[in-house]
Structures are given as structure tokens and as C-alpha cells.
Length: 190
View 1 (cartoon, rainbow, N blue to C red):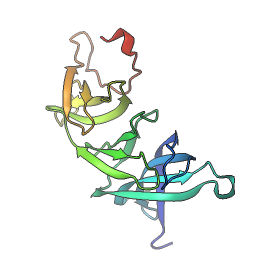
View 2: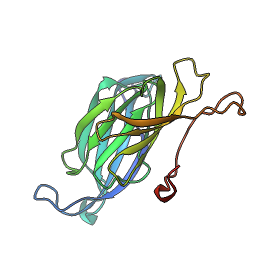
View 3: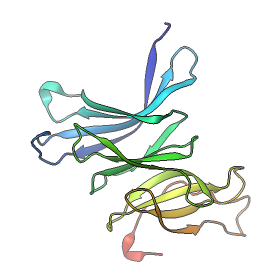
């Protein structure tokens, strides 16, 4: 059908919202996705954050908020695997090598708190893990744009600015290491 659009929901996170006057205590499903044209599969429109109420049995699954990002969609990809304690959700458009920080403390009115691109020479941020100090650990899959040099682990502050980073290269690994995901064990910080 002409004009029919699909919403490809890429990553979903379950979150218990704080109790506020604007949003009574409920559970919400926060989804990071992208808009595509169904007839050809080409990417059109924008990536977006969608929030569904899953805590009210009478309205289970009801869309309560949607927030498109300003840049055109290429490939909405990863967000935090677990809901961050500070309510600041990181999500990326992998092919665009562009990421966003969403403030979802009030799930009925999410906002874009920040956006960012590369971390120095490292490109294509992939996965995000919240750290107890309020920062976020990100995996960057490569160095540069030609996809032939190892990426890095990068600690980011709440606005996506680099706190510190470490290259993932190892001369014993061929062709190179592409950091994908992480499981943070802070007590054995390495």
C-alpha cells in the first residue's frame, strides 16, 4: 500500500517509573526504533523513542509518548541493556555513528538531553552500560571510517562527553578487535 509505514522497534527496556504528579507509578516499556517505508524497505523519517504503558491493565500497551530525534534515520540500533538508575537512556543510530541521551525520568514527557558522535578517533558507538558513578561505558566498534582498525571502550559522562578511553587493539588478534558489548563488573575495575 502506498504511504504505509512500519515502525521497526529495535531495542526495548522495561522500567518502573518514579512517582510524579505527571506520571503515577506504572511500569513502562521504552522502545528505541526507526521509521521505514514498507513498500521498498528504504529508510525514511527519523529514529524515535516510544513509551508504552504496561502497568495499567485497562490500558496495557497504550502508547503514551513518542519522541522523534532531529536527524534522519539510518539504523536505530542499541540502547542501554538495563534501565539506567539515573533515568538517562543512551541510544544510537549505528550507521550514522550518532547517539542520543534521553531523559526518561518522566516517561510521559521524555526529552533529548544530549547527542554526540565520535569519541576522538573512535567511531560507531554500539552498546551502553550505566556505571554506578553516573557515567556510561560505551563500546566503539572501530577507529576511523574504513572498518579496519580496532575500536575502544569509552567512558562517557551524562552528556556523552569522553571521560576516558582505552584502545581495544591487540597485535596478537587478526584482523582486529571490534568491541561489541560489555558486562560491567565494577568491583574488579580493569
